[in-house]
Length: 57
Image 1 (tube, helix red, strand yellow):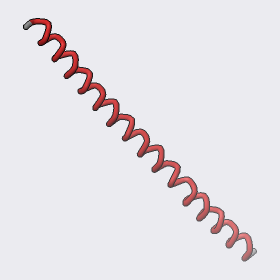
Image 2 (cartoon, rainbow, N blue to C red):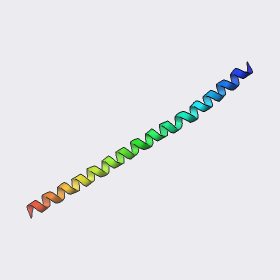
Image 3 (cartoon, rainbow, N blue to C red):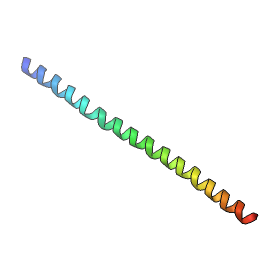
Image 4 (cartoon, rainbow, N blue to C red):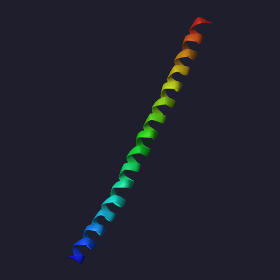
């Protein structure tokens, strides 16, 4: 009976610590993708604006 308690505690401990890094890694990747997408959007808008401004002059 005591062994079951130890093994269940050990497995839940391992599951918790194995899953959390994966979740945090996914969150970090999502955040970086959103940030890069925003930077690319701003860059594209600036280039478009400069090209249009150059055409009008």
